[in-house]
Image 1 (tube, rainbow, N blue to C red):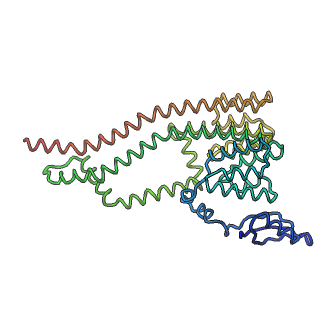
Image 2 (cartoon, rainbow, N blue to C red):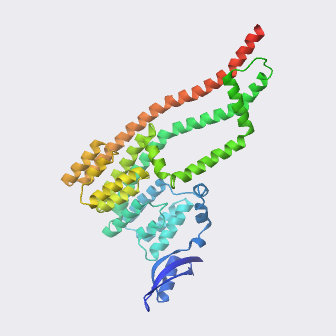
Image 3 (cartoon, rainbow, N blue to C red):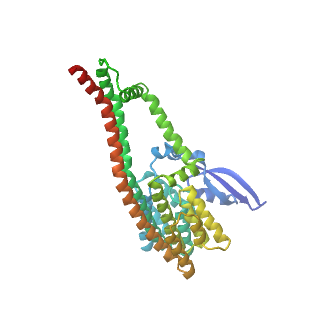
Length: 412
């Protein structure tokens, strides 16, 4: 039996009542309130009665590791299937039930089950989705709401699916560009750890019988190895603590600083800026094409940008629109948009074909992202090879120079 927290109005005295009640489902909880003569205005499951999965998700950092999340690909597959079912004339509640049975993700299955229960209880589909912001973004909810209002929910799902496919492609390009350097960094770390903990100690025993003075690089290398061996546990604690702290810092008070630093980071910063802008423009075009007003579409599209700095720039564009100005002018002032894109948006405003020009601008930026990813991959590969080779060469020289000196002494 679930516990629900509710707010309801008592028609007899027009007072608002806040309390709790137990019921198997949300629908039965609402029905129980109506039987008491109350008009429910707000009702939701009590957080204290949440499931074990809900409790695990609230654990900082570890929550996302302990419970499976809902990825963008799963949302896209669900949206494509929902379009197919609705277009075939299947009722929404039955369609949600079929989607619930189809998915193998336990977390997603639970979310869809709760959404179906809410819709059966009389809630709008978009309102039910809005209760799960970790699975369904503000953009997703806004477009579903516009589909409900216009009566074209199936067509909106098709537009959403096309947009999500573009987002997944961009996401895959970024991940593909960063896989090689990330893998190389891990290899470098693993090589350094093995050398410091296993290789250098063996050479240290050999050098112990060496009568001459060791070169400075060799002395520093042996001292570093001794530190690794003696205080490996302290290094592990420091690294784990740094990762946890940085994750907390970048998602809370430090997000503006981290987002600004990311945009100025060599090689990657410019690529990420193009990805953010491309996603924003294509999202804006899709939302406008769904019948949403330009101001609301701008607010929704800005909310999809994960970067704090660029989101502030998009908010300035919203303020310009509210004051009766154009869209292209504030976007140009952000200095995040290429001149070509700004001009295309300006032409779209003048000709009344803003949606079409936004899509063309997004296509232009996607091509820019493709070229930037290729250039990044081409540049990073030799850089990483040089770094890895330099580390190995430095360690080899520090270890073998004393060996050559020992040979010279023995021959002398």
